[in-house]
Length: 408
Image (cartoon, rainbow, N blue to C red; front, top):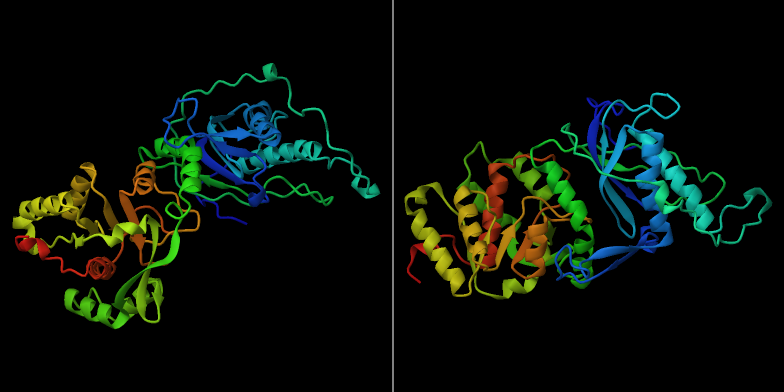
C-alpha cells in the first residue's frame, strides 16, 4: 500500500503526473529507444521510442479508453518508455464513471491497467481457458481498434495544482496465473509550485533523450557508488566541525546524525558520483564564501574565473549565495565544475535536463558524501551539514578555501 495525501480527495478535480512501471522491467516489452542524442527535438533522428505492438496497444488504451469511460479525465503530455510510462492526467470535475457511479483516480488507473492486461494476454497468447491448461496460440490480429475510432485532441492545462503523493496498490487481474503487464500500484505527483508542472512536462518530453544519453554513457549518467575517496577521516571532520560551529550548531547528538548520513569506509569518508570523474584529475580549487570576506567578494569571483580560464576545476557545495554566483558565472562561460550535493543519489536518479546535458558533456560532476533519504522539496539542512560539505570540498581539492586571497 503506497502513501496517499490525507488532505486530498482523489474524486476531485486536479492535475497529476502518473508513472506506471511494467511488471518485468528488464524485458522492456513496450518498445526500444532509437535516434541520435545529439539531434534536437523536431529532427527526424531525434531520440524517440519505437513502440512494439504491446506499446502501441498501451498508447491506444491510454488515449482512448480512459476518456471513453471517464469523460472528465483528460490525458495530456505522455511518453511510453520501453519499461514504464509517464503521463499528465487532468481531472476536470468530480470523477464519475460512464455508468453514473462515483469513482476516483485509483479506479481509473486500475481500469486502464486491466484493459491493457486483457489485450496483452491476447497479444502474447495467454487468453486460453487456463483451467484446461490449453493456452491459445498467439493472436495474429492486432487488438487495436481502427485508427479513426479515437480522435485525441489535448486541451488547455487545468490550473488546479496541489502537493506530491504516491498512488495506492491496484489489485491485479492475474488471479488465473497469467502475469500482468504492469507492476502493482502507481506513483502520482501533484504539481504545487509555479513552474513545477512545466518542468514535469519537460521531463516527460525528454525521457527518451535521457535514456539514450545514459545508454551511451553508462558510467557517467548513472550513479557510481563509492567511486571517490576523500582521505578525510571522521575524527578530522569532527575536529573541523568543533572549530567551525558554535555549541548550538554542533554537539554529540548532531554528530551522531551526521555519521549516520555519511558514506564511509573504514572511518574515511567516501562519495558517490554522477558524471565524468576524470574531471578530478585536474587542478581543483574550492569555492567557499565566508561572511567575513563579503567586502572582497568581487576579488574572490574574479580570481575564481581567472583560475577556471587557466584550466582549474572549481569545486563547491553551492550553499552561500556568493558560491552560487561564482559557480553560475563559471558554468555560463563553459568551464567544467564539480558540485557537492546535499543528499545522496537514489537508484533511479534523474537530474534536470540542463544538468544531464552538462554531465554528458563532461562539464559537470555531481558528488555526494551522503546516503540518500527521501525529503520534501524545500527541506533545509543544518549548519553542521553545510560545514561538513565545505570541509569535503577542501579535502577533495587538498587546498584551503582561502587560496584566492593570494596572487596566483
